[in-house]
Image (cartoon, rainbow, N blue to C red; front, side, top):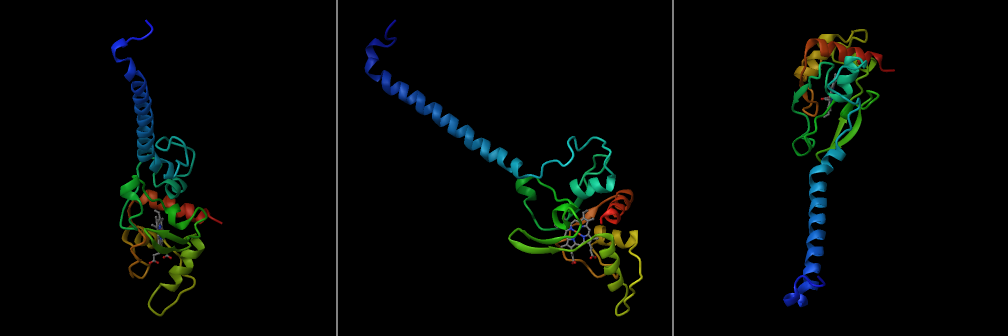
Amino acid sequence: MSNPHPETGSSALPKRAATILLALGLAGLSLACGMLFNAPVAFRRPPLFPGQEKPTGIPNGQRIYFTGVDSQGQRIRYKGGPPYGGMMMGAYLACVDCHAPDGRGGLHTMHMQVMEAPDIRYAALRDEAGEHANEGHEDEHRDYTLEDFRLAVVEGKHPDGEPLSTDMPRWQISDQDLADLLEFLKSLP
Ligand code: HEC
């Protein structure tokens, strides 16, 4: 059994070459597919807490801030905001993406536009509420209430009713989750 194809011996080499080429081609194709379908996953925020949908000891407000998912495993959905990769990568934004891990906000380039997210640590919110208390009537000592927070996060409005920019998404969030989030902001140094 030296040559399985005695009559086509001359084409044995090209055949082997073709097999190798095919194998290389398949390898290349699977690599390309891998890049196509897996790469976005690599760009996605890694789950901060492994097993996100399971109960953890992490306070609910902190969890929502960093992952956009509450302790019940419920994703906090939103409308608006910059169309940041959402469709392409199946990614969702969480507060942390714009307001930063320390709550101080900052400049971001999203969808090729520069956006500035404000400091939302509690002290900053209280200052802002003072400035927006009432047209022309600043009130430094005005507190920032849960209702003010709801107005901003759910309705996209300043305490005086003036609309926030549409860079800030409008969130569908339960009262309990909202209260927990505000507690978390109060805990930020
Ligand atoms: C896509 C970016 C983005 C995400 C995500 C985001 N925000 Fe914002 N947020 C903004 C921007 C920009 C503003 C400023 C809007 C303005 O001043 O008109 C803002 C404003 C706010 C304000 C009002 C601050 C003030 O000074 O009155 C609060 C409160 C707030 N965000 C809370 C949150 C919370 C809580 C989350 C998560 C549930 C969140 N934001 C997610 C971009 C974002």
